[in-house]
Length: 293
Image (cartoon, rainbow, N blue to C red; front, side):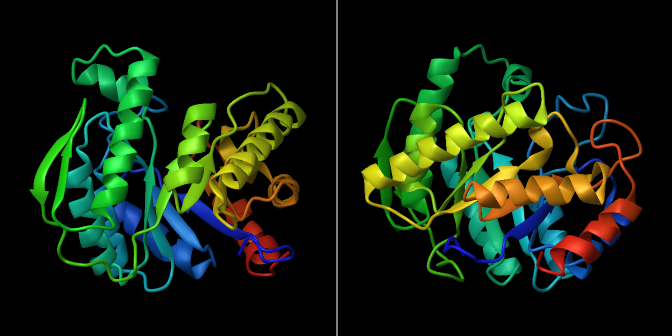
């Protein structure tokens, strides 16, 4: 997929704010519209909608696997804020089995809000240190059986990891922006994901994304790894990608030029964040995604 000229893949996030009766048609439609992967969040409370309901990612994706057959299904992203790597690995293996090998495991350091809800007060450096240990142990749990680990934040004693995954490995998509974590993604990830993070204008945001992409490429070179998939969350820019067909086409094209293999947007909502219409979503699917342009 990362080879020059390969088709850009497209993903969509279904914010887990609706009961299954309302959410179900969106997961079905995501596949029917031609998206390559569909994602949901993993939060106790999401800061973007602090007064909104939040449904758990693992049951949501298990349900989504029963109404779809080809689309990738992922969490964007699980974090150490309230998860132990061994418990998360169990969820991952179960979802991999339920979906017939379509599960994508996104992980990241996590946001402040989820951490505070559980009474934590950790400085950023400590949270990043914890994320690195979390990722290293999770990587082992997805590859090995009888895992022993004694670290600063986590421990396992003869952790069994049966059943084996449907594939050789559940893909580990490591979300990272800072230098240390980008290097971690290059070392242990099967793919890298970024939200860009800086810039008051679209051009400024893409300038920063380009810098991050170069940082990741350099890290991959240093690790002797190449061809890793790269996911860009378009809607972390100052603009919502599905404002119009033209904007989505521009943003996905610029992402491809920077070497990204995958772009991700959000299902439109009636108000902010991600305010938009399903009409634009359907036209993007027809004019950009399924046309291969």
